[in-house]
Image 1: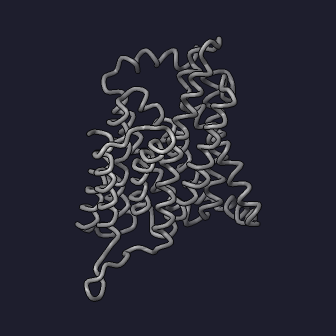
Image 2 (image 1 turned 120 degrees about the vertical axis):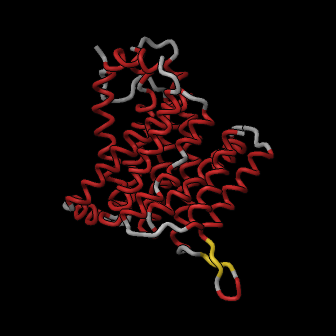
Image 3 (image 1 turned 30 degrees about the horizontal axis):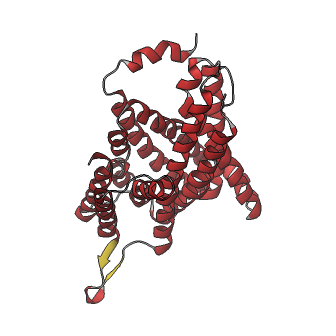
Length: 325
């Protein structure tokens, strides 16, 4: 008997299941950010991303094989594969490369703050390419989000002029991470919609539909694996990869990053919107910048400033406005 046949009826009858999954995603991504911060400094952003894709594909292959009987996604047509592969290139290869490099520059606390740019980026992408409506509330939410980020990263210098608190290189990586995540989210949504449509009329077990988010993550990770390998080759960085593989502590944190990130976090994020209102689920999943403040400060022996907390709360208010109003 497949595992979903045992648990699916129970899960479908639970109240607020989607909200609980979304909150779990936020906790999972907080753990991912903390582990990735350490792994990025030890292994390097590029090597870590490639290793993470390899590990996530192995985990997803075992999961799909155990639950659906096939080690690879079943039933997806060329259109679904195309959108999901493109999503993997944008979200993983571009977005995560920028994100992990931002961790190297100024740590995961600030890196996750820039990930709040994903919702407004997704909204603009949907508006430009999918014809989705952008109301005045959406523009206001975007303004509040950007104001919170600006409040956090800008300080007064000489002559009361504003200057950047953080290195410009890290800020650019952070912006790239948020934009990549937002555009990748829209592309993955298109891919999953095509995937669901391609399953109609096919004689497949219910497990295939239940595991659809994990199958979608598999395709995205495959694109990430190929993309990061090509970058390693083009940059002549395979030697860095070999060095990284011999770093036991770094590999331990890379494995933890993979488990809580592409395997659990990303897949459960796609699952959360299936069981809860998309706005509520998205808001709960975006709590990582708030949840990470205390553990990051404890691990790195840093004081928590009032300005950082206020800036993060303003940013999160903007994110919530996107989904709840």
